[in-house]
Image 1 (cartoon, one colour):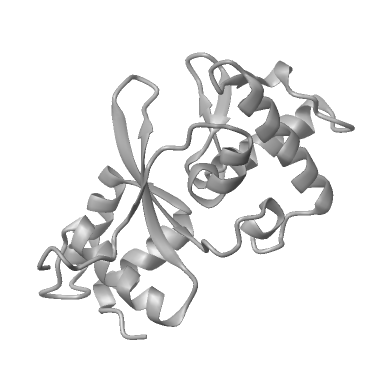
Image 2 (image 1 turned 135 degrees about the horizontal axis):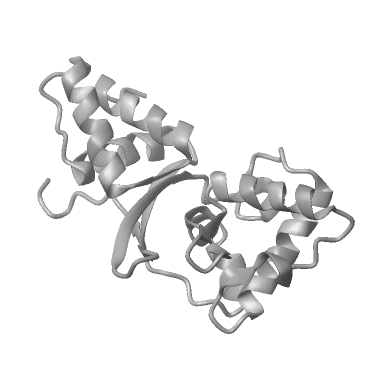
Length: 192
């Protein structure tokens, strides 16, 4: 796989962060450009992702997808995530690094959010099973850090995160959740 060095650096940054909004992606590309890595390579987010996806499709099951999500203060933002679209089961989503107990609890959290009227739940709305409040809060915070959940601080509620929308879209649809349109940037038919 021959991805240009600047694009490799971008891919590594995305893999490390798990989720990156468009503003962050632009900043990463600017930093890569300033560092001298990948001289004379495109720094346009869409071009970079298209180039990376073309190479990833050839040699792996990974791809970068984008989704437009509502922002806490209104409006929308485009967010990118590196996913394996083949493995969409919750236990496989983290490369089998999630325990069966945590996967079951995560399913319960997703179900609770899906069944709420506005897809938002407060900490006290969840059945935390055998976990103490402190451990359950840590569990939700880890899911938030990894992009599976999003925490709306203004209302102290949790909702689906970018990775859940992108990697578990079929699971959400089965729960009759409206899933944002996903963007797959690999087609070059527009002449690029």
